[in-house]
Length: 76
Image 1 (cartoon, rainbow, N blue to C red):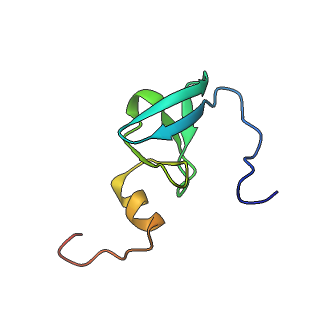
Image 2 (cartoon, rainbow, N blue to C red):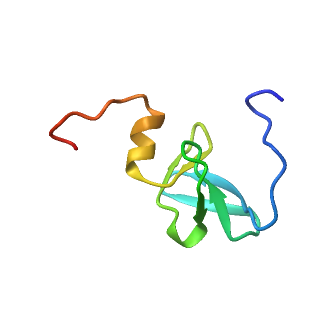
Image 3 (cartoon, rainbow, N blue to C red):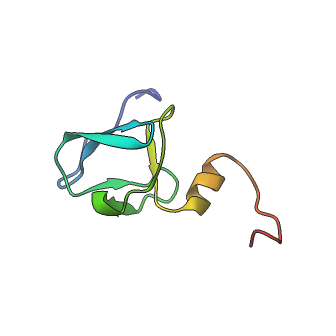
């Protein structure tokens, strides 16, 4: 599997296309998985994603981790 291939979807997992400021559900489901933590994110709680990488993130900290940015003491 190369980096552009996705693993098979699990039952209940939605297939989503991430757009600028919105997302489009390509295959109905209840959740997507966070690219960093692997936790299930219900679609109604999905707030963070990367359009270029087509990845979802559970929290803002997961977004920061995906970018390789280390948090400073002030941010913690």
